[in-house]
Length: 99
Image (cartoon, rainbow, N blue to C red):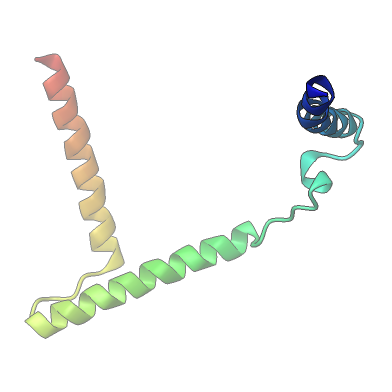
């Protein structure tokens, strides 16, 4: 009685997994076609969204800067400062590793 119960409880799920593995092995299409997966957005749409987000963040920063009476910030200036900070960080990291 116990052996039959254990074989059903343990063997049933194992058999289902084995059938799924064998079926996926012999499936002609790729994994994406197996689960019918498609990307939600194209790469171009993703790039447009990123650009829009950057523009929105820059507009928000400039709105607060205007409210404080500080000069507005341009995208080019922000990129230059980021590049300089990264270069400085790399240089300082190299100097620390030389110690």
